[in-house]
Amino acid sequence: MENSQCAFNQMATAEAWARGWTLTRGKPRPVNQTYGYKIDLGAPDHLERHVVTNFDTQALRELSSSLTVPGTWLKVCANPEMVTPFLRDIWTVQPPEYLMAAALHNDAIIARDDYQLSINTSGAVTDAELRSKDGQLAAKGRVAQSNGFAIFDQIVTEPEHQRKGLGRIVMGALSNVSIASESKTGVLVATEDGCALYKAIGWTIVSLVTAAVIG
Figure 1: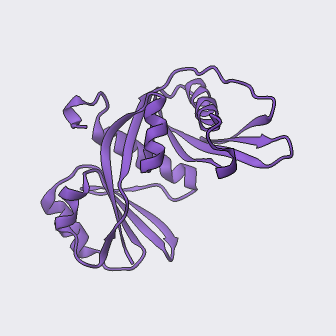
Figure 2: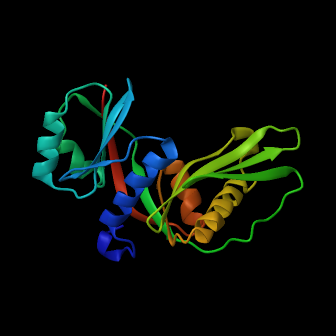
Figure 3: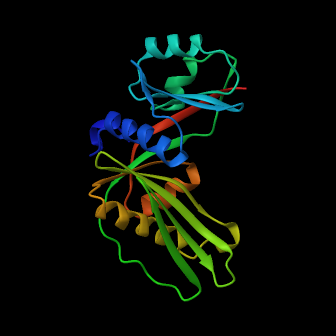
């Protein structure tokens, strides 16, 4: 989708996602950079993340050339064909991702006798879980509130419980919590598989996201 055809501003959406992602993962706040944000993570396989919210060829070339440490990640709001020519051989490009957004509205949550929904909020972060009658985790998700945006993350339905609409229930529950917190716009980054689910419930692709890592 071309940015001019999208009702959501790419840079504002990407910035909201970067801020909210650190909240949902319990990581330090993003540090402003000329290209977007740097996020320090500290794990050996995920040392730091650089989120490029405004694609610029010269800035990307300089950034990717300056980074050399394994475990360093790039997340660039542009399609792979635009990004890969500016990455050296040390970078491994990952499967495509999608920056998505939606205007939030109250959802009627369909109760199921065979699953129990629980919602827990701590500060700006809310978790929703669906468990089967025997207590098995069937589906879950998390959302963080940040400056009028609700950033959705870690939306997962366990394989044996898929194709039952559980993901929709989790998303609806988290949307209702976000609206009650006065957030108006939902934001997330989806995989190829997740993108289809979110489009089916009214989310819009704002931008492709090209992810790459130094192995």
